[in-house]
Image (cartoon, rainbow, N blue to C red; front, side):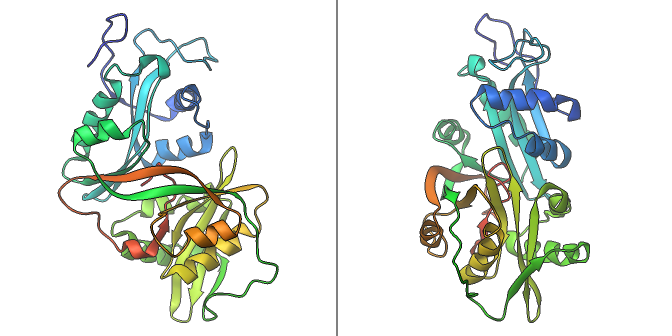
Length: 302
């Protein structure tokens, strides 16, 4: 492990648990990210969260509990079966930056991931490290944000489909539709969506359930994701019905190079606010049918 600015070695990477929730939240705040306690709680439950403790126990600028048990850095590994995984919430405390903590966390995570293809959303700050580790850019992702302007009289793009609130009985079909599109098993995560999300809609077609989408609240906006649909028209129907009932800021993470949604989102008041590279590590391309994947659950869950 590397050493801090005083030459004190950092402790080994360890698996974080529920008792580390407040430290994960403080680490986010230290780097100017939103606290997102609910999202951290979900990640600690369904993912593998790894962290490095600060050698002196000191915290950042939000050191509410006197610097006891602060994290120097953290990263999240989410597995989707044996062959696919994602990286999220890669964070290093400001005062421990550029000391090798981030690289140590990523090398530990990749060793834990084994032979799985690993994907992530990279910021400009983190991309140089991911490049050095062997990740390659496979596409782009933009955050579209703003108040959603619903159409006064909305006509469904596909009259043979309609949306409705999901029920407990829909979960098996949701998992089946998602697995066909995503190419891997996200059932552990999806089963927690009804409790995590404020809204969960399914797309009902003549032959059965054809897609689904959720909306969940963070501190500054309502995030719409995941969005899984057979085509762009169906995705617009799901997103429009979710967003119509949302007051305040909406966030959609979209591929800006795909034609189906960015221009439509802009016409409804959502403007691109940030751009990330979506990157992959491993010899196999990510599985699934990307044409049916319109938005992630979160960029922490690529």
